[in-house]
Amino acid sequence: MDFSFNEDQQLTRKMVREFAEAEIAPHSARLDEDQEFPFEIFRKLGELGLTGVVFPAEYGGSGLSMVDYAIVVEELARVDPGVALSVAAHNSLACNHIYLAGTEEQKQRYLVPLAKGEKIGTWSLTEPTAGSDAGGRRRGPRRTAIPTS
Image (cartoon, rainbow, N blue to C red; front, side):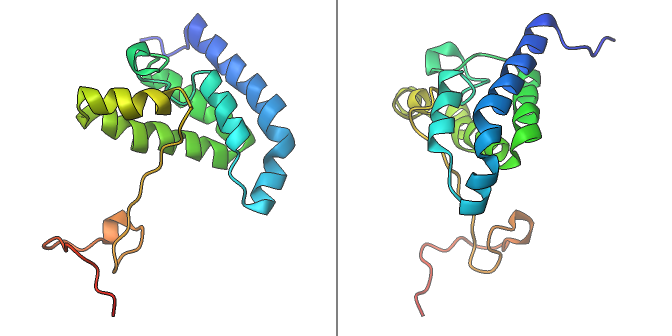
């Protein structure tokens, strides 16, 4: 079995690497120091089709494979792990839930602008006794409200 990247995957790697080195690397230290989200960089990532890597074109995505997606995240992480993680969270946690479980109307309304990079997706996980530790969450009945006192 040949695990080499095909020609398109090699071109994707080259394109993302060149983008990351030219557009992200010069700002990476400042963004980290200032704890600033790179909105302009994210917009450009959307223009390149990287905010909807694996989603079909009908939903604003690039229609690439999971291997391509891994290449994208790896190349971004070479330069700025924070940007890579933001792209991964946007694609996997925010967009993917809509793609997998959303209605057609939700996909058109939310997924299309997310995949195009016109909107930024987020995902939240928290529990009063576990914070954002998914493994430490309480296994019991759901609460409908968090006590205020």
